[in-house]
Length: 279
Image 1: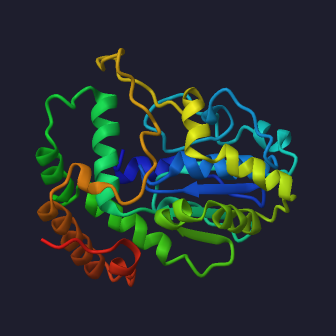
Image 2 (image 1 turned 60 degrees about the horizontal axis):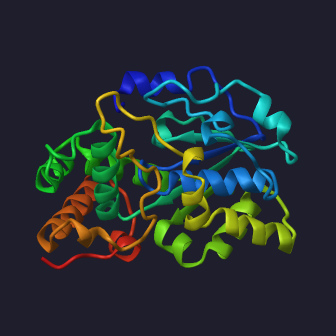
């Protein structure tokens, strides 16, 4: 999934237009949440679909199924003329166009690690074989999940001052969803009535999305336990990494992230954005 060759192939030959809204998050960082917000904004709160990937292409998907990138159907069906595109790629592999819109959410990497453990472990059917301690060591190793998070976060942080790019903090979106939706709608150039905004807030709530789980459900591995399907949206909470990680592990992730961000020359104010854990 992270190979350079595959990353280059995802958007090969594609030129974005003013109709494109990229939801360009790192995995397990509120991706479906932001796709739902953007999709509903593009339809002014009235978007309906059987599955999110029937209307939102995902060119770097690791499984078949999402609608094709060049399928104009979602754009033609949208009352605003906008269509949403999902990607987990860093900016190096995402085609940039001044008229397109780019949305990303930065989530505390400690929370990302916990969410990814439940999600990937469940989807692959290995939770009973991989402990959180095993997962932690894999994640902080060179080339692992945490290093990838740093590269992705730093790349979009560098784009944060571009007028068509919105970088949100997961914690802030959770704390004030109305304000976050207003900011997303503004950068997408969509005006919403108060009634439309209220409907959008409802449809972007964790309760609503949990009730519509089948619309966001991930693919299930052939060997996974079908009696315990993996949920795409497990908690959607901020500040809960201590449910699995020890203080030592949380602090270890903070150290690895800060060191990696310094190495790649990023000025993300890590402590201010995500907080630091004491050993």
